[in-house]
Image 1 (tube, rainbow, N blue to C red):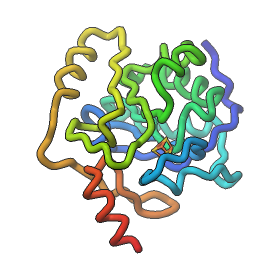
Image 2 (image 1 turned 90 degrees about the vertical axis):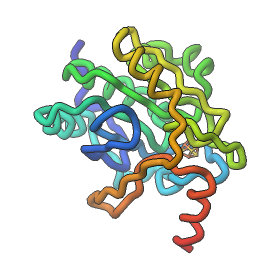
Image 3 (image 1 turned 120 degrees about the horizontal axis):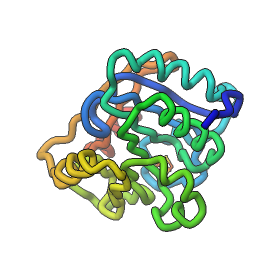
Image 4 (image 1 turned 180 degrees about the vertical axis):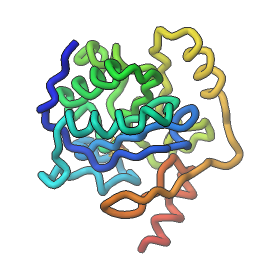
Length: 206
Ligand code: SF4
């Protein structure tokens, strides 16, 4: 299916390789704009939509295709809240599918059931969806989750991918891996720290 390359999308950052959010070395895309506003969110710099973050799907896809030669293991989409831009998210996911990139992992602060009832056509394009708000005070030691209320939903129809994620998602690492990345607009920490660690880092920033 042809995608609408002129579709407006607000993104905060696109980076490769991301090695701490999903299996292997991945392309990471962070949407800009989140209307949920979880207390204690570590990505508050992604809440506000501003025209300086606006681009089009064609430009984002060109950047993704630039990394395809490095054979990324997958793509992780976070934010911000990707489902606050449903049209852009749909076009992006279709572009990713057309490019032949498999293993799409996505973070959303909305509940899986709510997303399925409203955006089933988008959910169908995702392999693994981590859903639910970040809830301060509800710690988890499972990999890739920020709080224990969040669920890792393996949606993929790819049997091999399902088996791989099924085993990865049972991991409870003693230490979380984090990654520092340099982007045009600053230096960012990528990954999901334990809640206590996240609070300590916020104190350091003050
Ligand atoms: S949904 Fe994600 S980006 Fe939005 S406030 Fe919650 S943790 Fe932060």
